[in-house]
Image (cartoon, helix red, strand yellow):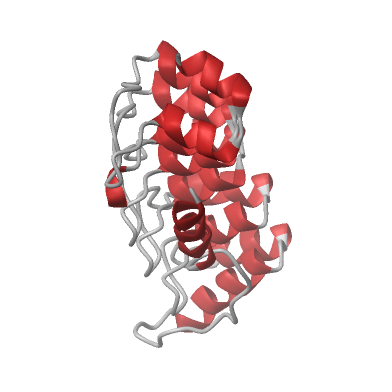
Length: 217
């Protein structure tokens, strides 16, 4: 499981972190858009409100392709998140690493944000640059409420990413028993194998998660 854990960590590192806010001057509202992005990054609720009221574009992005909606997820700033949704922010607009707001919220484990994004039409099966979906991240991180939300909304339970790894394999290998239960309840195929020929149970054994091995027998 070591190789796969490393890939998982690298994938997250591509988009999680602190970047300087920069802008492309491509329209007459550059200053307002810049103000909006700075306010969102600084969790400045009043600054976000004022920028939107003055005409800032809700889908303006910095050079990493991040919108104010995206940054509100990174900052766990629900008030700004709701302001951006109300302003018409595109819930499917990805960063340059192809990380969508739903993927970002699923990784962070914010079930309330995930629920709102789903209600606003977020696409469940979008994948980032490493072909990981929101469900893969939620299962791998053990965010059970998010896993449940995504599954109930119709996310593909056995959608595999690089190397044939499924959400069940990630949850099993990482030791997240409740996520494993949720995935199994939705019909996850525990017989599927990755590119090494290993099943979810094999990965649980490899990682020493005996309770999960019992679930998968």
